Image (cartoon, rainbow, N blue to C red; front, side, top):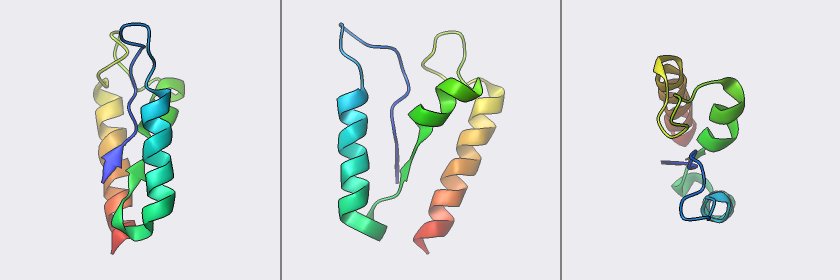
Length: 75
């Protein structure tokens, strides 16, 4: 299980390419990998803290639910 990366660019580089690789691996590996779409959901749902890296309390709860859903889908 892995989550896409939600954070601002670092050193002028975004995490879009890394997230794209994760999503391609998810599609290729089927049930051997579950990718939680954290980056896609966190930014637009208001789940990130002011630093735009860490989750806020609501975001941590939401991410836990996303991980639990992904874990159940593996079974």
